Image 1 (cartoon, rainbow, N blue to C red):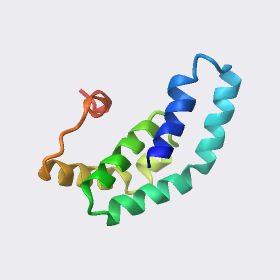
Image 2 (cartoon, helix red, strand yellow; image 1 turned 60 degrees about the vertical axis):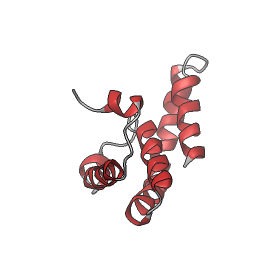
Image 3 (cartoon, helix red, strand yellow; image 1 turned 30 degrees about the vertical axis):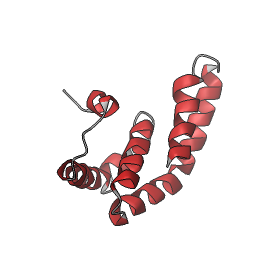
Image 4 (cartoon, rainbow, N blue to C red; image 1 turned 180 degrees about the horizontal axis):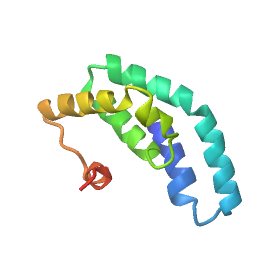
Length: 107
């Protein structure tokens, strides 16, 4: 999960100033095409994992992908229900969202 999170940060957060808009769009399209595998991994972890640190790492990874993931994953899958269930589980276990999650949540 950490590797996926770092990949997203490197491409879309830190390297944005150093890449052309065309290169960013090309990388974004390539990752969107491969997102099904990332989504499948994250879904499986969120459905089956019991270890809070793994669940949190997966939630943090998905947060990094929210800016560019294909919209179909939000509306045509159980992603939202899964995220709500896992965030509730984490809150019950004493986990508190970090600043990144607070800024991603609608006001």
